[in-house]
Structure formats: structure tokens, C-alpha cells
Image (cartoon, rainbow, N blue to C red; front, top):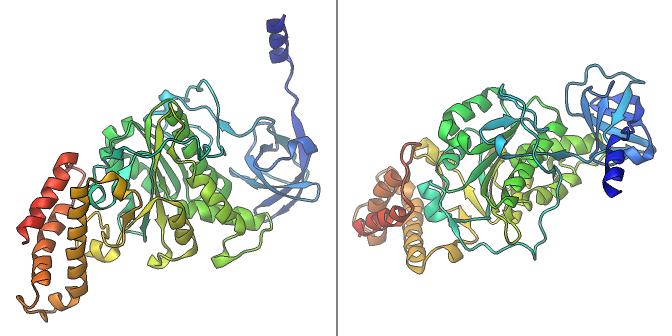
Length: 438
């Protein structure tokens, strides 16, 4: 009896709820429709049931405010609007590995249509309950020497990668995707230049990195809702693999462009601009996105998150950078000055930290790193005098040792794609450099 009822329900025609475009103003579309169909974040097709997608981002009286997610040049007053009845979801599966998809799960790499997974993952899912998460106890080898030594990362930890433009963020992300000890890599490219997406896939990531990766991308020319959704869809894909017990590394480039997309959406919906034009919803959406990474409930895997932040004018205290730094479990600062000296990855070891370093490092490792940091700080304080020849060797023993350490340390921390280091060998090599400077 029950099975017969289920079959009848499946055969029942789906009711298509629709409305009409009532007004157009810039990027903003105002539409009427049944109240049951008008919910924040819902998607709708403009013109016909398969027309351009738009997202409801707010309301004005009884009208819904929509922003187009796709090319919307054909929108006109009075056009029909077909509202989607189901919530915004993706259906990821193992077949997504090695593929490049758009924020809606459609292939962008010219490959075949992706098979539908067995169950849906909400694009805008809430983070796991804080009390249901497991604790971070196991260290994750990232394959990048400067990070493994000075900003150790645990499985399920969330780190921010702060850098200006052209300092090597994308290159470092490619190194992490190739070298990190993770089962699956999920990469969200938000607002990237169209030219750089293929270069990142083929050059920075390579065939080996791509084989265990899923890339979700929306380029800089995509509408704001699509750029915002790219970050959220990347998290949904990562959550799918986490729920299957996988250890996932989620690389999101960049949180700043996610915030800019939300700013566009907020301004179009009528929010007041605040600090540097960012709307209040930006600072509400950031923790909702970033908290989705982390350890999962018992019996599942973990999502280790590395989120890049594009600092405006190398100002590391601008609003988005400041907000993200307060949410995450550590920050890695990339320095333009270090990059100009030829050391890549250009990570500033004095300004970078991991909040879980004391839990992840053995006592002797922590002592070694602290001693090396002290010498690096000494060299940094005296660097100008050393470079202009104003420092006389022998004037200070600590400075002399810092000079000797700097030569070997810079060479050791310089790393390319083809220069991996085994986890056990990283601290042994650093100890040799430190002892040789004595």
C-alpha cells in the first residue's frame, strides 16, 4: 500500500510556480510571484523554464529582488519568472574528481556531463555543531617546508593565506595541492582571471594534482551571485567527501573576492555601505562560510581549509583581512619584500603563526623553531645596517650567528614544485642549519 502511494506521488505532475518581472534597475531585477515561492536564496529562471538563472537576494514589499547569475541581456519588463521549488543543492560524487565545474555543478572542462550523486548537499549548509565536532589532534604534512616548520597545520585546521597581488599565492596553492597529505583536494577559484584558470589547472596543479582534485570556479566576469556561490559550492563538495570519511584539503582563492561579491549583492538589495563600502551582510556571511571547514562529527573525515586573502595595497589591517584573521586558526603572511629577494614561497616567518602549533609540535621541535625565530628576528632588526655595511662583524655574537643562519635558512626555505621534503627530514635539516650557525 505504501509503495503504491510513493509511486503515485512520483508520477504526480510538478507544480511550476511563476511570476513576472515588474522592474529593472541596473543589475537589480524586481519580480512578483506566489509568496510560497519567494524565499531568500532561491533560484529562478527568467523568460522560460530553462532561461537565465537569477537568485533572490532580498525583498521590497511584496516584490522579490533578484540578481542574475548568468547573462541576462534578454530580460525585459513583464518577462515570466519561473521559481525553483527545491532548495539550492549539488549532487557530488567520486566521478567529480579530476573535473572543473561551475558553481552549479556543470562541467567547464569540455568533458562529459557529470553523473548525479546519490544524495544532495545543500550549497548553503550550516556548519556542524561545535559540540559534535571531533578535536584536532593529528598533524597534516603540507609538503611546503616553510609552512610545515613555522605554521604547522592539523587535520581540520583553518589557515588564512594573506598576500598582495603578484606575490605567489596561486603558485603556493599549486604546491599545496601537489604535496599535501590529503585524500581529496577541493579548490574554489572565485573571481579569477579567465586566462589563469587553465594555467592553474595545467601548470600549477598538473596531472597528478588534478587526479585527486575537484575545481569549482567562477571567473571575474561572472555575476556576483555566481562568484559568491562558487565559494559555497566548493564547501558543499568538500563536505560531501568529508562525510564519506575522506581527509579533505579545501583551498579557496580568494575570500576577498567572495566578500566583494557579497558587497555587490548587499548594495543591490539596499543595504547601507559601512567600512570601505562593505555591507553588514559581508561580515555575517564570512563566518558562515569559513566555519563550514574543520573537523567533522565522529565517524567522518575533516576539511582542512586554506583560505587566501588578497590584501588591498598590502594593508593587512583592511576590514576583510582583519575579520578573517579573527575567525581562522592561524595566518600565513606572504611578503612582497621577501619575494623581491628571490625566496619563494615568500612567507614571512615572523608575522605568520598557527594557533595550534603548541599542540602539534613536539617539545624539542617547538624549542628549535623558537630559537630559529629569535635569530631571524635579530637579523631582521639589523638587516639595513648589514646591507649598507654599517655593521662590523664581531660586534655582537647573536647578530653574527643570525647572519650565518640567514644564509643557510634562505636557501633551505626556497622551494620549487620538484623539490619535496619528507616530513621527518624537515626538522632534521633545520636543526643542522641551526647548529651550523653556532
